[in-house]
Image 1 (cartoon, protein in one colour):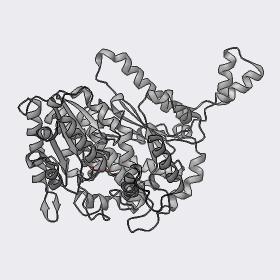
Image 2: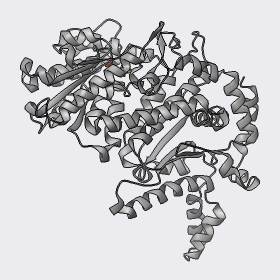
Image 3: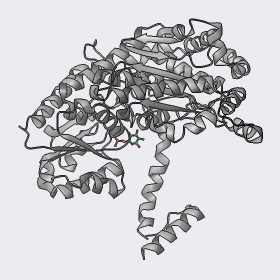
Image 4: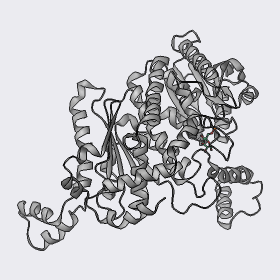
Length: 529
Ligand SMILES: O=P(O)(O)OC[C@H]1O[C@H](O)[C@H](O)[C@@H](O)[C@@H]1O
């Protein structure tokens, strides 16, 4: 399946992207996909026509289309947990029935969304009581999505102010609650399992802060384990459930998105779902060569498998997407950071790159040095909106866009030593100083990047972008032959943490603890004494 691409590795590494542009006057058009207002430009990569054909053949050979139907059709493709993968059903607003074990799940999904909307309206119009602030307590998929989206949609906020507590570090709780009034604060305890140590501890401490049991009336729970919510003391009418066919990191489209709905209202939330649904439909129907999630995945595979780049940077030129890189880190790395194939056999290649990033322009003044001149090439995924939300600050937006375009241009073009010398000579420099400094001012260029251009960051567009990345992760996972929907790799640390809690209290160290950890514990206890 991989032979054709593997055979291209050597020539691809030598190739100059600028030569591809010289050889094909229409490259910018043909290595680009436009769909429903989004434009995905992957022309600034080393993929050529033959490479693209091989990538598309890889997607065919991996049966991406068949697996896609299996996912949308409700088959239990999350085999290690015996579950369907149907986050797309949460946004199937005009969808056909979706069957799980022969039962259409959409009536339930719609009824829950209606209950969420009714609840959100009652909080927003004051009929629930006077609520000024909402605190979402959750972690991982029960935090990153809502937090990212609430931040992204700031111009649409017309509800209570939303805050997020995730870390078990008491500092998170303390700093978030500082200045809030318990009487007008609504808490959402968001946990798919309702057993996550951090969330349950934070929820109990928040309840104490809010005034104990009497404050439970301002607590809402979101979970797949609804019976556990009752044990915590939250009655069924304020519990919003969802099926185990929604993975935690794919869950903000349903009840886990309640904080988003409270912030922007049910109408804007629906637009967010509609954007995601539109991308689902595009993913289901577009030819692979014109299919944005498929091509985004294939570009990632090209950069990693053919060119050997082990990381990729997500660089949104949109301050309100500041948490998107963190969100994508969970989505991509928890999904595809695996070593075994679905059948348990060892993978013969590294699946899933390290994903990281920061919004532009801030990153430019920090780590872009390495991106431009470091020895390790980092494929960059730029994103930018053609328009911002601040017409009175047009000058800012123009500068933002110019910077985004300049970065991908610089990465592509680079600067030769001759050019560097000429620039320095023009400034009057000569001799040894010129020789030396010119070398430092050389940019190899030829560094790959993609750009996702969207009209403006609306709820609809945010839905499109997130759904695009979800399906990209799916396609990459299918091609690597892994299960993108489990996360066994987070278990061991949790188990050991459970065993070490008594040790941190000075009640003995579990057997098998390493000398290093033993020594650290000793020191911690000594400092505390
Ligand atoms: O929603 P919860 O059950 O509390 O889980 C919260 C998070 O913790 C787990 O450790 C998983 O790694 C995440 O995928 C999950 O989103």
